[in-house]
Amino acid sequence: MPLSESPFAAVVLAAGKGTRMKSERPKVLHEVCGRPLAAYPTQAAVAAGASPVVVVVGHQAEAVEAALVAALPSAPLRFAVQAEQRGTAHAVLAAREALRGHTGPIAILSGDTPLLSAATVRALVDARSRERAALAFATMPLDDPRGYGRVVRDAAGRPMRVVEEKDASPEERAIREANAGLYCADARFLWEALGQVGAANAQREFYLTDLIALAASGPGVVAVPVSPAEAHGVNDREELSRANRELTRRLAVAFMKSGVTVEDPERFDVDAGVEIGADTVIEPNVRLRGRTRIGSGCRIGQGAVLTDTVVGDGVTVNPYTVTDQSTVARGAILGPFSRLRPGCEVGEEAHVGNFVEMKKTRLGRKSKANHLTYLGDSEIGAGVNVGAGTITCNYDGEKKHPTRIGDGAFIGSDSILVAPIEIGPGAYVAAGSTLTRSVPAGALAVGRARQENKEGWVAERQARKQKK
Ligand code: UD1
Ligand code: CA
Figure 1 (cartoon, protein in one colour):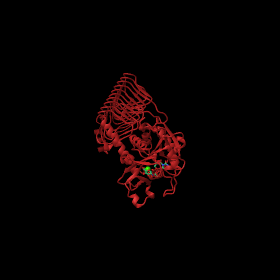
Figure 2: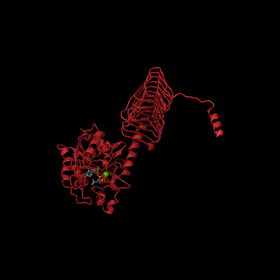
Figure 3: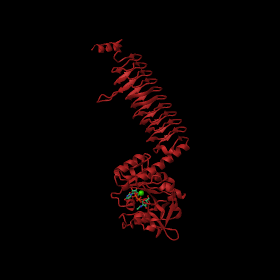
Figure 4: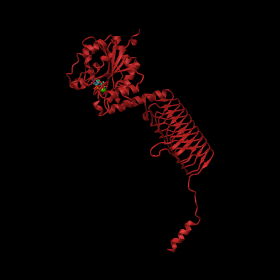
């Protein structure tokens, strides 16, 4: 069996509060590309082949656990609780029970390194077996290593220990080689060494980084260089934004490689897991969120924000359109400035125009609602023309009521349809009507005051004024 197939477990440390975030929310739940920070290293461990993967939770443990299960529903995760956060070594010890019986290598990852790839986790695991060391740890060269533990090497260049910044001498602080916070340890060494870690340091914490000195002076340690682009940790909001940008850039590159035009990847926001078909053009400042899927040959206009929206092939979404939990069928045209609230289905080649708001509404094939309209709780057939300013009055202050409009109906401009109401197929509604009763198929409904013209009225008024 090749070395790279030896079974290994992983521990993801996600119990800390993340004080530097200045947040009520645990750091590992802050999101990058729509997913919690900790979901990324956890996913990397799973993808690298780790089994089991134990996530150590503590600060707001239930919330962290729930968010990870939601983000990675099919991952074989176990959770261990570190009730008090007394340092990274203490956190790994909390996973011991969950790893009872596991004798193979154990990879340890930080929950705050969202850019880490599965390949790098794998490389670290492999390096340890290859070098037959008790411990492998990842290091990276940084121009600005502030906040990271520094790697202290002996005269022969062998790693001796890692010193945390708060405990470092000025000379040690000048070291640019940083501890990336990714480790792989032999199980026996790990549990034994953790028992020897104390908290006599600047932060009164049990540092996992003490393992490096313990391995270096005993069964051996190997330092594995990794790319800083991957191992950057997120400790504050600035680093969060940088991680988000970097991950977005990677997603944009992947889209471009698969045939999507992303006009400006620096002005594009996308959640992990979004899908886009080939030959679709994404204009600047588009944001695609959640489980959005876009077909091929579409154009997504500037400033559009699509959340959990499924878009068929050849759809045009004009600028500044906002959609949520809706589907848009092949060849449809939305926007500019359309809004689809949850539960809308826009049919093939249908048009939804500017300042049109829809909610829980199905708009049939080739139907059009092009201007200034509200359609709520409506079933609208095929080939219907909804005139400018049409409003479905779906709410009576207590309940919502449905509106049904049959195929081929014509709703004149400025019509008020008081629901529940049904407009039959092919019926006409005269402009400016307020309708409270249903309209049979093929009928014309006029629901407005009749116009009266008073001939000569202006001249008569002038004459009356002059008399006074
Ligand atoms: C840690 C390393 C540092 C390294 C850096 C790399 C230690 C002592 N220091 O520092 O050498 O350069 O990572 O990013 O390990 N956590 C717990 N329980 C705790 C404390 C922390 O689960 O009691 C978790 C946190 O939620 C976080 C991870 O461990 O996900 C790392 O903790 P953090 O406080 O960010 O460590 P750093 O100060 O960045
Ligand atoms: Ca960190």
